[in-house]
Image (tube, rainbow, N blue to C red):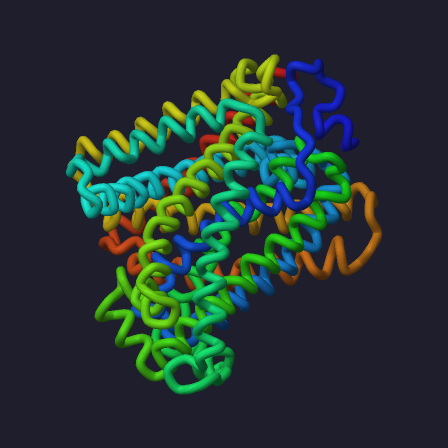
Length: 471
């Protein structure tokens, strides 16, 4: 399969996206989707409380190593497959159209559910400061609706507009966490600097499986390096570099920041402290080591972090729909770019509507926006992205074995195989602790696992029908 066929370079101009983002812009989009402040301020205390406590930094490093192995083959593949579909396009190139459209179904499920969950968390997060500073006490879903409108407008326009917005927000949130981290390390934490968090004993403290699960969730959006390949100045160079940089940046930042929080409270005391003050632990640490102004600033930037993630996932989903439409696996209108903005405007509109429908369903059901909407959708997305990456790993090995496009053993065989095996092990850990991850019952966990299978099957059936129709 040639690059021209996969990338769609032979199609008319209205079916191509425009942009000139470089390595830095792509990395910004990926890291924005990872929502650093949301992970450190929101997910980290939960990991410390019910996961492996002081061993959380090691969990981040472990997941980063597995994803770096995966990235070797992923980066090699990006030189031969240039398409906004990324995972979908890679699986199609390696395992065929039917499996590829099944992977597309999984990708749409993954990003749609995590985005819907973030709408719930962001609505509550915005509601708090508004009331705190004398604003109206309105339902969380109205504030989520305000954010939804902003995302819809920015997602409709050219990618460079969204990149500029995300860059500013990302610099601010990374900056405040960095200030806190440096302050803790300079002051020596609660009992001095130690490296106990990176030992096997600390990693196995409590439930290591839950710690690893949350660490994986923190990397959701990782494939966006390839999603923006058509809008990059030099995709064959930009995508591989951005992939490695994104994994190292996310993994290193989370490991260092979480280690600092552990030191700030104390290696022996951190798990208990997180259990007592899960929602406010990191803000309390920032207030103690930097000052009350830093704590207040962090609360505000948590909201911008969530907004950045909403926009990043919206962009990823709209480009998936664009790729599916262009390849003939979805209505053709989705595969047409905007005449002025060069954006996947049709896919953006569809995603805006679907997000409103999913969140609206939870609102009508009277569901809790954090304990149910955010928690359940995050768990479903974590499982979906793991299965998706395993498929991609197998597809990469198969593609190079069949085509001989790249004969480097490490890049096309060994690293992808080790990465896929690591992802299989992590998936096993997720399934073993899935009920805890979603905070629900066993029957709910089985339902969500069934939904993952259902979306893959629906996508695969769609591909099979399309192939028979073409034949």
